[in-house]
Length: 542
Image (tube, rainbow, N blue to C red; front, top):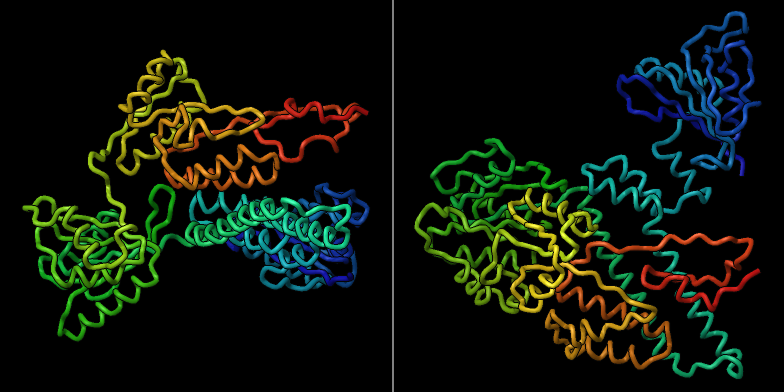
């Protein structure tokens, strides 16, 4: 398809060392050749090989070549179709990065026959030409606007295909099952559907689970990109504004002893552990006859309804009242952190009383409330039986985790025990806060010993009837697809129990000679626990 040639400044519109003007389209080389000269004053751009960079000059277009005026000294990059971002012929002019200079060169390119690109048109062409899908196109914009390291990493992964590859795989799985069913219906004599119901059920559950996870991650991605909308609520004079000032690190909100000082919202943005929080301080929520304060309270309610996270500040020196119960009902479906403030005063309200009040006020909320269990600490110890050298991958990873947890006030001490029997004793007796071990499986990832309620090494004391049923069914079946679906669903239940924190997973790097081995006979679903050595009998030699 023939396309017109577009041009735009590809770098920021600010003074810098280098600026880039990008030109893309069927006539990109012809257009730039009109204004580019090499050091011998030749028009040779169209003769250059693709993906090469060349020194020269950009000249202004005049009536005769003798009157040409040099605009700037440049480096010009040539990228021939389809090996470019847009899959079209593309030229990038690297010039000096002054705003005036970049605009002057862009104007010259336009006079030579290009047109100004619309916002996002280069990415639009990459999408229309099939180089990237919609997910990757969105990732490009997310990378540009990333406000923190986590958002940047997420966008880069998406650009590399983390989302589109999953969707493509799920689509292939669905199409395969559809094709199989249609083939069986057309040719029942040669294709049997016996036992297919169980296999299809497992596959359906697996696909549904992954789709749910993708949908859930969409909201997570939004919060990574845009920040977590965090609203501070509570009664008047509970200390909301003081907490805002503490988190921001400066006196942004007015703080007095007078209840109702804050009558409007106050918004600030902070970075906490690499995550952006869009914090809103609100007016104290209470029944009031003050017209201005009423407006502030209603605004607080409205903002809270759209919040990703609620910080509910409770004055622990005052008893709970109807205003507190009103706030509890307002935020009962929200992700909420309850802060007991004013610990320097005599405590009237404790954690247990708040939880009791929540259960009484918000019907059906009991199971959603998570509180720190009795004996919860700010300091924990994890033991590793890795020989005491401190060079095991788990040790290094957990040390990094310790540093990260330290930023939010948690202390994690990592001990690398020289004697493995000490580690064994620590988890046998249950005295260790946490312990670390490596689980290794063969070709059959049987979960019975470790996770079944009757398992001989079920040190987690998991007792889940649904999990037991899945593990038992997987042990009895010889259908690998069916078993994989069961084990995947079983692992989700195990993760819900929260007894394990996966730290790392080793994978094997295998090199085979394609001159000797038929690649089509290699297993296509290898995992770090199922390597080619264990399926060597299936390999074919050429």
